[in-house]
Length: 164
Image 1 (tube, rainbow, N blue to C red):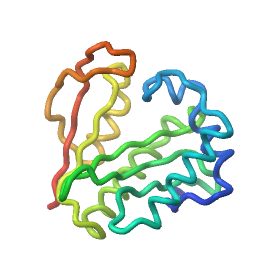
Image 2 (image 1 turned 180 degrees about the horizontal axis):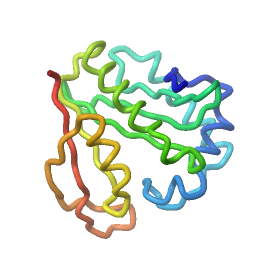
Image 3 (image 1 turned 90 degrees about the horizontal axis):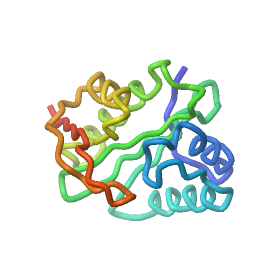
Image 4 (image 1 turned 30 degrees about the vertical axis):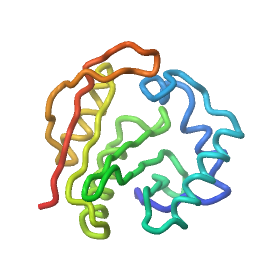
């Protein structure tokens, strides 16, 4: 059974494992393998965000039978507008976990925050992520050109969902 929970200090090893291998192929810093220090910093940033008011972001661990298999983040970009991002360990792909997590975070955002509109994007070479967003209720807005980490301009699919 999939659950979402706030990250905890002892989640650093799981976060490092999530941000490795094929899972980071289409993330910022393409292919960068997270270090132990990076993972501790990522968790510390999530914990700091949880203590901030108004809260700028929510970082949830995606867990299955107590095992943290991914992370999903909801960020406030401007009043009423948020962004959604997620990542799963490569050995957990194809089981519907990202879709379940995305649906739950969308429900959370519209029920427990002031956000009325969410956006998400994915690397154009990662169509599975687009299918996740579509199944979670997002609509593709188009393919604006965005500058990738390496400076190359790439047409990223951008999605949105609005509060019902």
